[in-house]
Amino acid sequence: MKKCIAIKNFFSADVPLSTLGYFRMAVGGFALVQLAFLLPDWSWLYGQKGLVPWEVTEALSTTYTPLLSHIYFLLEPLGVSIDFVVYGIAVLFLLSLAGLTVGYKTRLMAIMAWLLHLIISTTGQFTAYGVETFTRIALFYCMVLPVGQSLSVDALLKTCRPLPPYLVTLSVRLIQFHLCIMYVACGMEKAIGMQWWNGDAIWMALQQDQFKTVDMDWMATFPFVPKLLCWTTLLVETFYPVGIFWQRTKKLWLAAIIGMHLFIGIFLGLYLFATLMILLNLTAFGPHCFAGPAILRKRILFSSGIRRAVFTRLYRQDVV
Amino acid sequence: MPLKHIIYFILAAMHLVMVALFAGHFAKWGNIKKPVTQALAVVGNYTGSNNIFSFFAPAISHQPYAIYLTKDNNGNEVVLDLKGRSPEFANRVNNIYGYMALPEGGPAFSTSLAQAVFNRYPDVDTIRVAMVVQQIPDMVEYRRGERSRWRFWFHRDFARDSTTINNRK
Image (tube, rainbow over all chains, first blue to last red; front, side, top):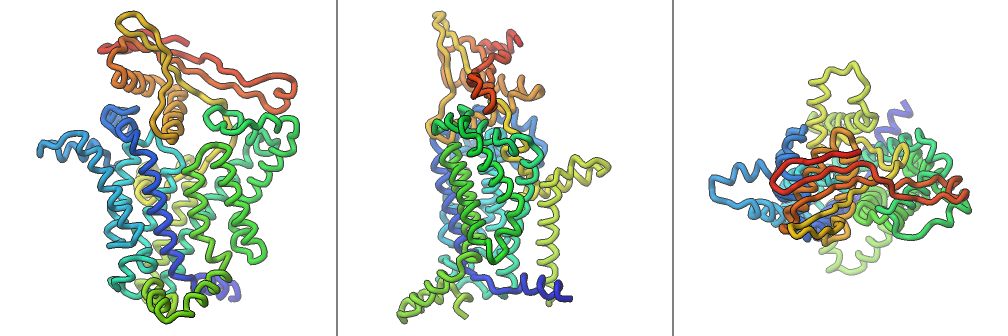
């Protein structure tokens, strides 16, 4: 019975609505930056005669997902060129992401962004890596969760209906649990490999020319350093759900996981992947881990009547 | 709790169960009827719940890479490396090299990349796509004096407007 009450409390505990607003802005903003990074090589990555031509992608595609070639097939009778389709989709994606980031017609923009990302990333599926996986997951959550209710143009214009608090909690828990499952799976899969126990995994990754950004040869002389890093990774990932939800360790765990992703970004050159993972962790667990500062911010903002009016509109239910 | 709320909870739970199942490689467990697996994979692909999170796991293997030896119609030979205009391009093209290293992926992806080089360099007449692999010693071997080195793996030759002309291992 006590366990049932604890579970019920867990899902009914008040979670700031702004958590979803920050999540939306982080995901939309990140996807815009990623798009800016990819645009110079856009036709190489997604064009008909790109690194992997459309014919090959179509032949190897098994996921029943729309591709850029399908869009072209639909628009070809209208006399539309291939380049128009390839770059037109990029422009539409950019507009939908901008709308999503500021929270203007949030649901519509999120659906567009998710669908266009699905088409683009499936067309370039053989060039995609972890960053695409998590962008798709995050955009799906932006589409189905009420992320436009806070810190958005929609909230300022009062076009959103008030949300029951349980729905906010459920939405945030969904994102948090997804991260938990992901880290546990990552940690367990790594633990199967011997390299993660003797330190060679970090050593090998840092020695690969594709990732090498800093000379780390000295690690072979001090093998306890990569070994310690490997063990810390295993610990932080495998016990992520416990560490991040337990009151005593949550701040430490958030700092550790962000540290791990910073390491990946700086030393392995996977800047975009690291940035996205840090943003997802900060938005999903930041308010949970640092509830104090958020309350303090509210108090400071409430000191002014005008600020209070703006704040009430932006945060809506947070202030009820 | 209203019915609508219960439905939301059930949907969220089902989604998370799918995330956990795919993260646990459920498609490889066996004894699961294929149409069911396929249907779940399609749903999972749209919802982002069909992922296996094997980043750098269980081990880090040697790194495959491709270089391109091109020859133009005057007989000039140039060794090319595919570079993009953004730093992100390298991460993307390295992913294709990973697929090229698979036995079933090699022919399709080396042909694709050769075609991409032909498209970018109109003067090139023939291309040799050479797959190399960076062999990295572990820390014990490194302390014994071994260093990482690139080894030739296989190559495929291509001529403009024709199919592959030669394969070598």
